[in-house]
Length: 438
Image 1 (tube, rainbow, N blue to C red):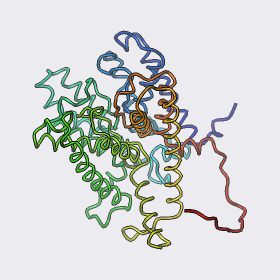
Image 2: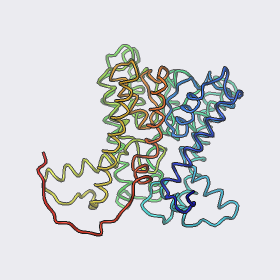
Image 3: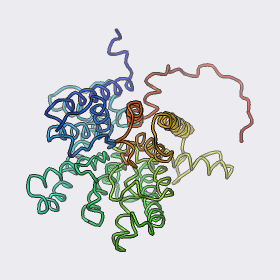
Image 4: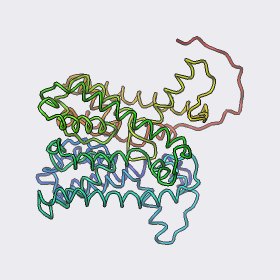
């Protein structure tokens, strides 16, 4: 048996995630967690979807699970979104325990930081910020839903959707997600602000808080802010134009309603998972565009999934630099290192391989259109949770495949690569030689 010290941080994180998923599965399998019982596979799928903050559901969350079962799901969402190590570190501090190097390394890996410096402070700020934002949003939502539903249901719905939205989980206690509120500006704004803040990256949020001017912000913050605004605006215009005359989505809405629905459906594929339009009725061009958004995802060190926006921007910048004959990638008077470009390339290729394998398996096991299978596969990997309707009819092999895809998508292909690949250093230099490409 291996000693605890022989495990590297990625292995420990994978072990913690799988352990909590299995524990959540056991809780969801209890008779008091469901209305009419649930299979072990569906319980495992639901626990995985909640812990990886994906939102794909093989059974309806609001009708299949009791209050106890929904609270189990909500707990898994909170642990998976903010990070179990964040909670563990804060508890360590609360009981007077010393935070050692091993805990700092685990926290560094969990929060996707480049060094262990300041990770404990970041964890405390992250937990405090998350809870405060969730509570404030819940109060706002309660002011909308208590008059409509009553005190108990209104407060519960507000808390559930606030936590689910901030953690980019996409779980809803309503069968149609937020489709009832497609033209409700209050709900649209509150929910979208929650998952945008949760998905932009905690280091970015904290940098925005302390930096008074754009020029003083870190490069990560500049790229995420500009990239997010530009991508969201472009996505809104794209969905608005593509769906404008679709009678099953935007065509039947008022002008203001079209704007609201297009905006919400444009920003939610960045791993949020909520929907106000029927995904299955959208144009194929819109669905293909959303697949791209789901693969890109949100920001690093956030509750979002995907390859991350900065990864996509790094590859784009590298491509533009190559076309212009530049040896260095320069943005905002800063040069990106070769290691960052290599990491972005490895992450993107690894992610694409996972998605391709998932699509291939589902194509063999599921009786569904190819676009639906691609959409479901990318949604699972990007921990988005949007579905064209395939999730509920998945075969056993299909469910297991998406369970693995959601887990890899949440923790990242590189985490699994570093966990099981033997690391080595280039101690021996070899002669260089070019090969033909292109």
